[in-house]
Amino acid sequence: MPRQILNKNRITFLSFVVLFLVSNITMFSIFVDNNMMPTYLDVDRKANGNTMISTFSFLEVLNYPNRMLNQIPVEPNSSDHKIFEVDRSGNKVWELIGLAQPHEIEELPNGHLLIADTGFDRVIEIDYPNKNIVWEWKPEHINWTKVNPLWDSSHYYNGPPAFDWTHLNDVDFKQYSTWNACLISIRNFDMIVEVNYTAEKLGPSNNPDNIVWYYGDYKNHSVLQRQHNPDYLSNGNIIIADSENNRIIEVNYTTKKVEWVYQSGLDWPRDADEILNGNILITDSLNSRVFIINKESKAILWQFKGDLVNPYEADMLDNGNILIGNGIGGVVYELNRDGAIVWKYGLSYLKSVVYLNCIITVLMSGAFLFFLFTKKNWKAEFTKRKLSFSIKSGVLISLIIISITVLLTYTSITMLVFRILFSSR
Ligand SMILES: [Ca+2]
Ligand SMILES: [Ca+2]
Ligand SMILES: [Ca+2]
Image (cartoon, rainbow, N blue to C red; front, top):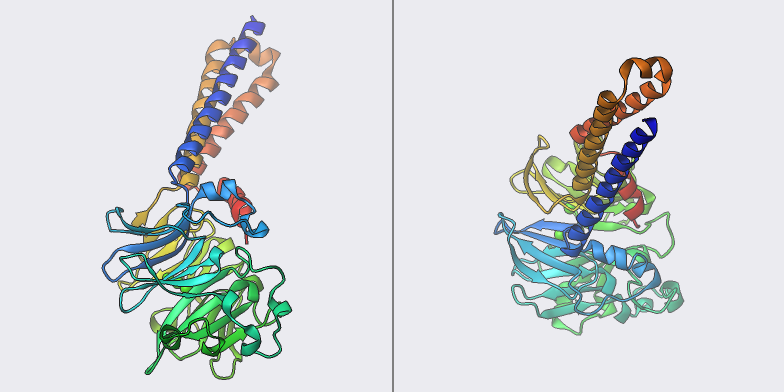
């Protein structure tokens, strides 16, 4: 009799293990094959209400986990790396492929797009909605010694200018009264440069004389360390997410002195924007949070952590909502100031996996409990094997409670594991 029970137990247990594996693998394949689990980097709301999203697929991460490290170029027309535009209903209305981990999109006043095409080490301008490249700027073409006589080629070329050697990760645009400028972040140079865009467009382009300002110095990490998203401030200074120094700094444009620092509890911040009233919106990537501080007092005025996994950047929209490119979380969010989601694009793979596994765990534990309570001879079991029975029941009931708790509150373990696995710097 006990032998039979044990066999049934085994069969039930094995069935559920198989169910776990099959359902998880199926779900994973569906998400990966359909490019439903991308990494969202820059997200911008356009004047027409659509949203521009720069992304690369999770398939890319799986196939080439060390692409950047080993400088393995992206195939020229790979659709795994792209920028696309979605309308309010989530319809894709425009798409540009042929990029490599594009990190930034900047809509110009004439409707053209500036793109930081990170892996291909360049800034390109596209005559949107066409897709012709009308300007290209590459650090590779710059004679850096002309920018600073102390910089010879060995200063920057710690390898041949192959794929992703500079990791050029941002471009910002500014209209001065008589000329226009681009602020470009060259991460592996630990440096940002301001380029005279007007002069570049007149040509010849990629002219070192058109670099009118720079900040940072290769490997001098007390100045900058692998930064992201430098922006012009309204006072003319530059704000920079000094990512691997875990701080946000404001640099005086004239003196190049650091005028303001925020570094309280940051872990790889990748974006800091000046918003209304001079407050600062910060994307704290490895802490998976987006928050707003008062610039003077540095007090946190607003914070959102729910369902973010390694977010890349956030913008405050004209309506006061916050748009977030949720890194490897698989979803772009627009939140109101109460933290409620008012618009989203994409599906959360992580969330789906957690839900699926919790549901299976509840079912599995429930079935075991049912089996225990109905098949066992209560009185006999209690006197004979009280301890083992109680432990079994206790463990299963705990599993159910834990699963329900995770189902209800979400986040936690799976999120943390994914964060650690895929937060490649
Ligand atoms: Ca942008
Ligand atoms: Ca930016
Ligand atoms: Ca931003």
